[in-house]
Image 1 (cartoon, rainbow, N blue to C red):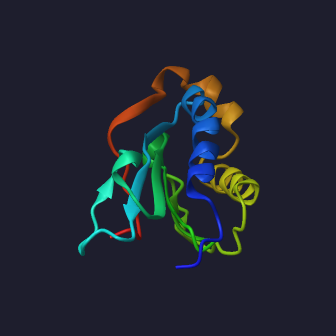
Image 2: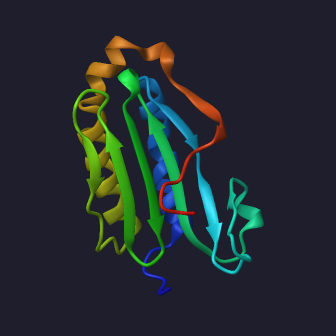
Length: 143
């Protein structure tokens, strides 16, 4: 797979936003990595040091009313993004042409807003709910 985006930089984008998401009452699962050179079936790893040749990273972000955003970014410049807003809207969001960490950051902010709405409103409603999940975040599309 062509290397269009640096997945370590993309993971830094997720980490930069995690505190704001947590303060807004969202739960952020651990980032998962998939190693292209690992034997099939490839296992998802939460320890970056165990992944020699990463081809994807994923994270699950959860909120109130069962809202969820599951995303997997592939080094080829596209992502598998699934969301459910906890009410009546959900599905897959097309995500391609992601050619830099900055482009990923822009898309990520849009996906979070589409799924969870304005974080300021949720921050007032439930600031105590935010915590980092101790479990592995589900990474849709990285099986």
